[in-house]
Image 1: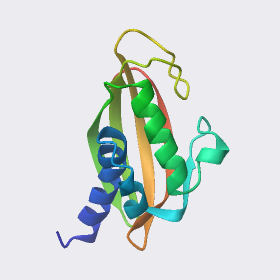
Image 2: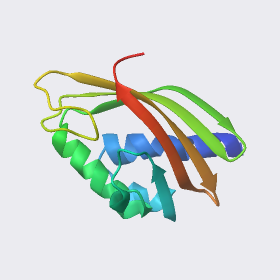
Image 3: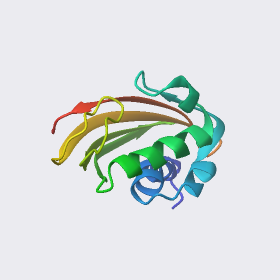
Image 4: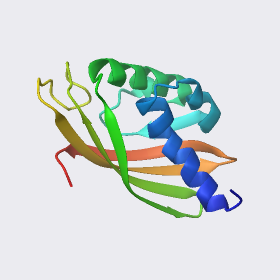
Length: 133
């Protein structure tokens, strides 16, 4: 794949699909810059910086929602930024960043805007909430 925009989209898709869905935590080191910042007011500041914070969040999400599923509904890229509109489903055993515990399948939808520099994700702005598109 030689198109830089497509390469950036692949990197951003890996954030959800490899780290969160597959549980491949080593992917965080491959695609996230050391100075990565996750910009979401629901993410504790001690977890919002660097690949290690993402690994902790992904591990917790997979433990809290063993049936976690993520789909990418739409992707748009321009310049050094990639926007992904996504849907997440799962049955949360405990509260997770504003999603309440439930014994029923829950859906959340959101947008992640990634910024890429030197082939790695350096920032992600995120907004999400319960519901479906």
